[in-house]
Image (cartoon, rainbow, N blue to C red; front, side):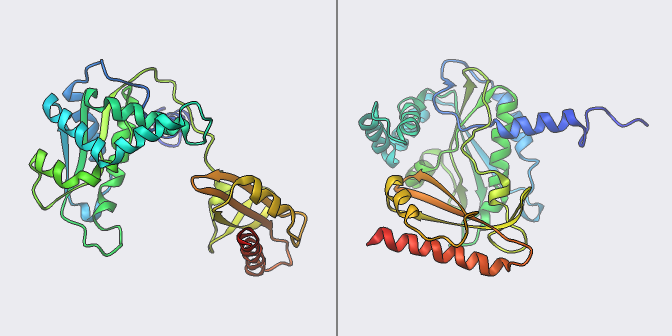
Length: 300
């Protein structure tokens, strides 16, 4: 029997799957609050999500679908009191400022002010309570399913965003939805059709060659050969960090600093090649000492 043309390993199959995965974005400002979503579409997406792996092959995920308007109105109140009201006020202050978080906060504000208008709110839950051990525990059987739900929505022209701040009001939500004590809420998905479907991969991600390590932490491989990388977050503005970097006496010209602004300060990633006669552990230790020196200079 001939193999189907559209099958795993074929270019078309790979392209479609990759595109769906790479363009499933967290959508806040492009949710169509006025277009109705049929129950069956949501159920179909949950059917897809339920195919995700689960620990012990135990079907312990349960999904809350909130449609009733009075219930959505109360959910919106809890969403705001969980901390989103602060987000909205922050977004108002940042509006027009050019701050790095202005766009993110604007999206969160838009969702917070309109979440009661969302056609459906979906909460994935799992049977059981986390043991507080710090291990993934329950969550390793539900997070992959929740992500699959997002991708399934995307393939049907719908969108959502993964929200967890509402969990600050989890007990009140549980009471509202009559959740048993042995059920754990994971996140909240506001579900709607998207305004347009032209979402694209984001450029704000590191390439795999910079963040994938082989056999030991910090050991990279690229077209230019093996290397090491380490990083540090600093509570300083990029301009100050850049000036401190320029004052460093680095061991080799081939070392590369990457600097980006992150909430609360700056992130520095230092890349160093590993030559044929070099020991990667020694080079990585030098990289870490250099970052420690940078941190100390910024404190002084």
